[in-house]
Image (tube, rainbow, N blue to C red; front, side, top):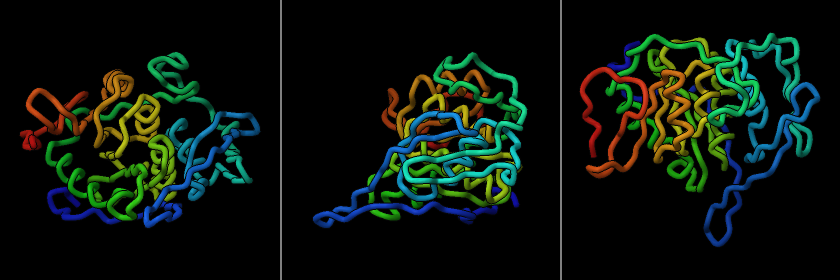
Length: 258
């Protein structure tokens, strides 16, 4: 299916949301979780207490390209997320030294995509589709949303969370479960500012185009440029607010000024 024939992307999977209503206001609930990878403490994440298994799978897939989800087990016990089965997976060569440009230690090398795979038309399709799928629009809560799209098949998975980082992990996990990560021309859209860790994990999952609905972060721009990724931001520039290409390339005319 060509993107030109896509009027609306089909949702293959979407996370839930968790909130409490106080005085008519829906307030998203978040909790702190410790993440263990094969019994070793990896770190902490902040997340809505829902779809945490997908967050664990997203962590695995965001650091091990081409991972088989059947080889990974995720257990959620109280305030812990335990990811198991990665020890047997051979680590990929490092793209950067641990911690450089905000890259998480142990992040796998991004498999470069062919250049000029994406167009300004793709960006506008994504922008239009994603704007109606955010947590604010769909659930009237203040939370972040991230989505991964298979542009050629016209399908998407959508994840919501209080943390923009965790929303990306959940989106990668959903994409893994639904078989999207082996598709060409993957794109991601996020309501949050794209930081380096988000860029690296999405890149390791095979995403070649990232659209951030907020202004950019320099760590994310530098990471995208190092990887040759296409990064687009809805940001203010000298001519007002518009869709700005910050890294990589897009085919076709840019009609995204507004």
